[in-house]
Structures are given as C-alpha cells and as structure tokens.
Image 1 (cartoon, helix red, strand yellow):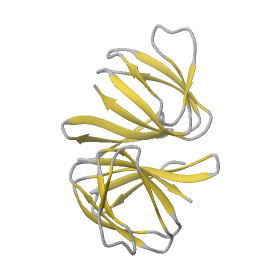
Image 2 (cartoon, chains in turn purple, red):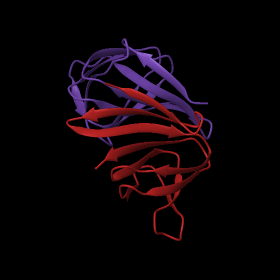
Image 3 (tube, one colour):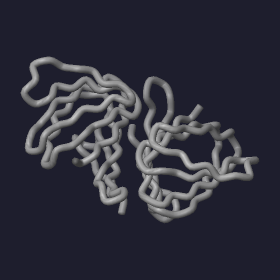
Image 4 (tube, chains in turn orange, blue):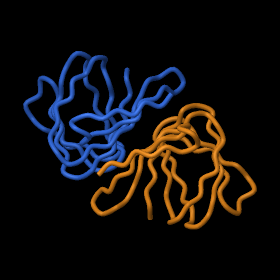
Length: 93
Length: 93
C-alpha cells in the first residue's frame, strides 16, 4: 500500500510505504520553515535539494545535502528550513 | 507546486516538483513489472529497495540498488521489475 499524505496545507507531501518489513516514506518539501513531531525514532536522508535542521536539544542549525542523513529520537520535534524544493527519505527505526 | 501522480492503477505513485529550475519527482513502486515511456531524457536513482531494469536497446536485465542510477533517452521505453517496494528519484535531464 502506498499512502499519500499532506502536511502544512500541502507544502509538504509524502508517500508512505513498507519495504521488506521496514516502514519508510519519501516526500518533498516546498520552501519554508517547518516543525515536525516524531512518534517513533526516524532517520531522515536528503535525496535532492538541501535541508537546514535544528535537532532536539541542539542550539545550532546544520545543513544537510543529498546523501546526508540525521536521526531524530521518538516523541520529539525538530525544526527544518528549506530554501528550495527538497526531497527526502524517512526511515522509521 | 507538488504534483501527486498515480500510474498502473495506483501501483506506482510519485510527487513531481521543481528544485532550482530542475524538474524531478520522487516515487514508490509496489512489487510488480512495469514498462515506462519517457518523453524527455531522464536519470533514475534508486532511493530504497532495488530495481531490475532492461534499458532500451539492451538484451540483459541489470539490478540497481540505493544510490545507483541509470539514464534513459527521451522518447523511449524501459522495463522495470521490482520485488519489494522501491523508492526512486527521477531527474528530468
């Protein structure tokens, strides 16, 4: 099953899927600033574009490029700034 | 703008976008066998899963894994077999 989801009034869209028992999604963010809440821990990998991120408990923002990834604990939130359309893979850990 | 598209009765879904003037899409394929037609040339990059591909003019099938890419000329078609849910990035060249 492929589940299309929209967030932030359609500024972010994703397709959720399960591959070999692992849950994941790919998505795209339009330029903007977003706060995402996690239920389970997840690993985000930039696929195209760039993502500037402030992780929970961090003071600094860090920019991630295609191929870069970062992990976010469950039951947390993280902040993302995107200057151009950015595609990502989210693996639920 | 983020354009969600469905192909093959919803077995393949994608999100089209433009990033820095480049058109691209990310998508997910459910297990199955598909023939895609290209208008413009494109580069496909596997994001998660695996994709076994027969390119136009080729006799052999080749399997691509996350991070691998292949290019397809415009106005052509290529065949894809997917054994598990597979996510990809498509860059229009």
